Amino acid sequence: MKALVYPAWDTLEIREVDPPSPAPGEVIVRVAAVGICGSEVEAVASRSPRRPPPLIMGHEFCGEVEEVGPGVGEVVRGERVVSSSIISCGRCAECRTGATHLCPRREVLGMNRPGAFAERVAVPAAALHPLPERVSPLQGALVEPLANAVHVWALLGQRFPEVVVVIGCGAIGLMAIQVARAGGALTLVAADTSDARLAMAHAVGAEPVLNPARQDLQAEVRELTRGRGADVVIDAVGTAATRRAAVVAARPGGEVVWIGLHGDATEVPGRDVVLGERRITGSYAVTARDLETAIGLFAHGRIEIEPWVRPFALAEGPRVFRELLAAPPSDYAKALLLP
Image (cartoon, rainbow, N blue to C red; front, side, top):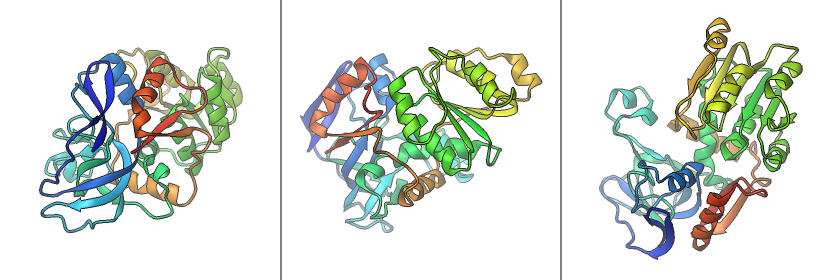
């Protein structure tokens, strides 16, 4: 079969590789569409030890069950499915309480085991979710990243917040804006240093949109909220500067969620956190419930992807990666590969 292989540092190429065979409890999925995650682009750019070559990456995908391995009874050939990117042990304390994404023995597709940048991929049947016919392959490949935005929303204590600010209008930020809208947020503010990304954010419901390169984000949010600050601020970038900006843009008693992971060391204003009782929460990956919610949002037409998603043939994968590594594109925010 053909696959987009990461054979060595700084190298991506299409190769002919042996197709996978299902182990007990696994199925083979013929991949219909797979997304290129920002974490994968970053891994190649930084030579991340979390994704060392040789490797087939790809963890955001949908497809059709082609082969069923021994011991699988709940999945049938021909079924349309999406998969969790997290393969958990199912036995630890975290798994038993439903926090499978925090399993200390978890594996990640496209990181610890071969992923879906290929025509076929082997997946444990327990990680699969049925995909309704009315959800297209392009939408199906976006279920996992949408579920990340759903997970952010599920972590919040507030319901129907008046003002939500999303910092970073890449794919996760654009998803977070739309989940916030579906979740009852009244005012959606988007912040990004790219005017092209801000235009995409506006197209999916953000108003106003702010460029911190030209505008003072904290001052603009204070003016919008009569001096209080935002109820919820989501940082979908993950640098020291954006994490700090998220904290100072939140109102006293407000909530901050960090989902971006571009950097590690971060200094935030401790007085603002303590004296204002601002709550900072980290968000990582997804649960089975988040995936089911994401599927439902697509099935009911609540998520718009046309302004910012671009499909490419799998054979174009190396070129698309090179372009993403060079600079964020101005005409789309998410690349999908079609094997």
